[in-house]
Image 1 (tube, rainbow over the protein chains, first blue to last red):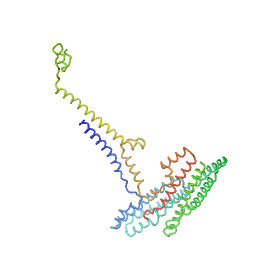
Image 2: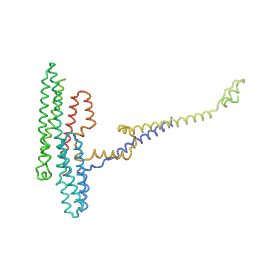
Image 3: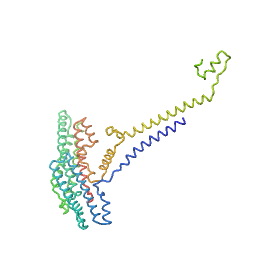
Image 4: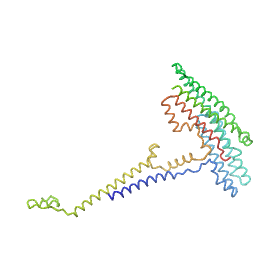
Length: 252
Length: 150
């Protein structure tokens, strides 16, 4: 018996070691910082501030452009994968992304060939100001997606309306009181109409906005109001969902 | 009786004579018992170790089972792929915060809910799909708020 206990302990130790090594492998896969986050170029920014040379400025500029490329690629993939964006809105957004990438590619070439520090600083300032990837392009993609999503919900709510109306008619024919169900269905349809009314005009307002308009202060308020309108539209859709469920439950 | 083993020889010799108790040397018994014990403990040790190693290997292999029963040992390519996925998930991009309606529609949880609902009332399935769509709208709205340091 005395010899069995050490054997068991040895086996347990071996098993434990195997398990720990597996956990170790999992923990060792530490994700690196994201390529498109605003902290990605922090090192280059600090280097440029502490010792502004052509090299440090160029490194910072290249980093800022590269993270925008990453963001633009992700936005493009999002548009391609979307099931709610209309064909024309998707095409307009993809076109905007393509032209932004072309502009940034040209700016990067200029930064890479520039030898004067003051000229480099001017070029670096253009990365944000001339393209507004984060303040304009990304919100355009997201808000137009949200708006088209609200509009796409209308068709699906129409199907729900058809089914619920048929159930109300059947319940009424069976002599049941359907007043509560009908009230809920009406509320659903009203909420959907309100949501669509808020969202439908937004893509036409958002898509033509340019970085120049953002810099002059005219695009920002449009983006802000579109965001607010879509918040209301989303709340209306939530209310419509609640009404649809209330109608269904009233008929059970 | 030449075939008999030596330990029984004493008893055989007693036949026909006056009764005599055969005494087997206690040293000999001890040696044989020790030998048997030694064999038993090494077999037990081997069996216990093999069992525990087996359990440990099974425990290590389980996470990969969910990914299609692939081997527990991951290749460098697989590790790189896992690292890429983790990076893509955790990258603090303005877009990573978003949940596109399409992406939300394909998420396993919502797909399972939709499938569950579809198995019952078709109306429930439609409402479930609308829930997913609403989540997508919500995700796009939250994603539109990132400045990205501009």
